Image 1 (cartoon, one colour):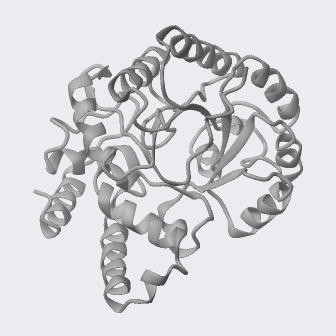
Image 2 (cartoon, rainbow, N blue to C red; image 1 turned 180 degrees about the horizontal axis):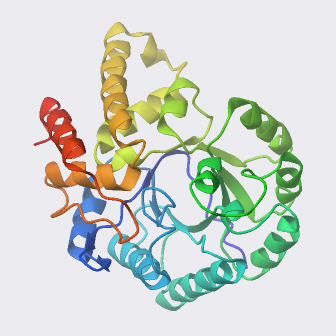
Length: 319
């Protein structure tokens, strides 16, 4: 039976960074503190994100440990998105199966959704058939991810860097696929919206903070900055989603949102190029994480970047 009560949330989705010790060992105590911090503003939490959570470079074992630890800590207090994207179709199916098994065995009381960026390991050809099979193997809803930058940063020989619009339209016919996290051009975004217009209730989340602040989608944003600035990003998100609300007519509200947005953009400029590494360093400087340890295959910040990070954290009184 499908989880019909698991309606996709609207609002701020916080993609948790993965707190690590040396050797890519998960730091569960630091994770607990991070959840308390990020959860104060988030409407849902995203685990193992391909950028912020280093989901493409961590081992399957660490990704499973991270996801299960998050579920054990929060016990249904927030909806949880879990990234299942792996190096191959088979590995992706296997990771989903293991997470499915854990959720079922534990009797998890909350809402869980699977997130997948298929073009990192699968071409557009045959993608609808792949997801038809995948959907039959799980009771949980699926959220697709599209980010052409992921393909550009790898040696993947896949020809296309995006899910093709015609393919997305066919994928939207699979009832279990209920949302999309989108990063890409405005033109493609328009085409995607057109392809999805027949699906009532389908959620379209922005995968880029800067894009959301300029042209907010109707459903929300995946904002890595919410790890560090949860309340600010909560206010930004709901101000953008309710841009025509009466409160926005008041000058003090508009002025406050402009200041908050300027702060968020200032931090975004620092971590946009090295999302996980820079954000972890910021969280460490701010006293949220005990270190800035990244995964073995994630380039760490250098001395110059560290100085800039300390400067901006000091400027906004995060130290």
